[in-house]
Length: 367
Image 1 (cartoon, helix red, strand yellow):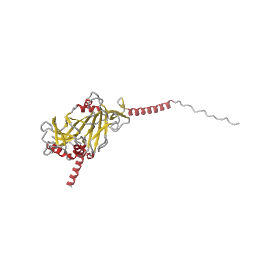
Image 2 (tube, rainbow, N blue to C red; image 1 turned 180 degrees about the horizontal axis):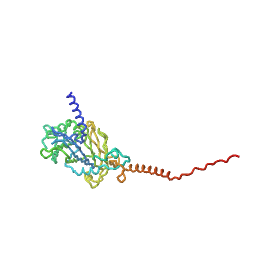
Image 3 (tube, rainbow, N blue to C red; image 1 turned 135 degrees about the vertical axis):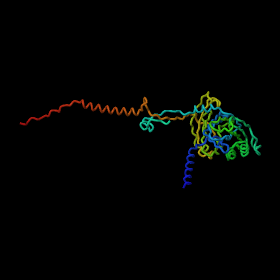
Image 4 (cartoon, rainbow, N blue to C red; image 1 turned 90 degrees about the vertical axis):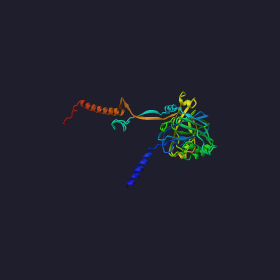
């Protein structure tokens, strides 16, 4: 009996812990893998894509938590890429420009948290792996802050995986299989190993943004490797281009949702990031409940019209006048009017003169 009770308690605890796990954020890597014997959660991942018709830029910023000291991921790119640290100010301006509009919406009758229903209180570059020399080319390897970045070419997905593992890049199982379409198209790769420079430092908090730039005739956001993720994925994507942009398909996820669309200030950081001129920002959110169903990469195209859109957040507020609820004034005024009318009637009745009864007409006697 005791063993059964312990089993039930363990199951309930597992269920509770499972309910606290939020979906992972999706990037082209599919999963950020920490070093063995440690764990790491990506609390938030923001991806900014800029495209001027010829050159594409992707800036990634992660907010992570856990006890990992190292982690790695790989981003396929259609052509030779340059990699550098990104500008933090880019994300500050993004947050300001795309913030939802707040509007107050008044209601008349009191609700559960209003008086009299409540008390009024409020709650507030290493050596190639053996056998991979002819299959993997090291274009460059740089140390950028806490990032160890390797830019690679490959003609054999297994050789690529072998090189990565030999050089300290721990990546998801099944990577070689998912890399085959990119190898066939002769794409290149940016492999990133996160290893803080400070001895013994853990990967926590918001990491420095990383900026990739490469030539591309199409606006493409790599997503195929997200098929390797074990949990549901959530993609948050900011796209800066000449027009409002939209994905050609949902690539196996829920329908993408536009959370903001509009032109950005011509003199701001965002316009400079995308090459200046009239730059249009499109913010997209998309969920992938079953990552294994992701069918390819996101290809974005211009929408039919540059229609602006901004989310509106309504804050409901009790209608008041001079700090007094209007419903109370209305009800009080109505009650007062009824009382006055009743008193007036009583008073009018008291002041009304009492008329004598009309004389009784008695007919004369008959002779």
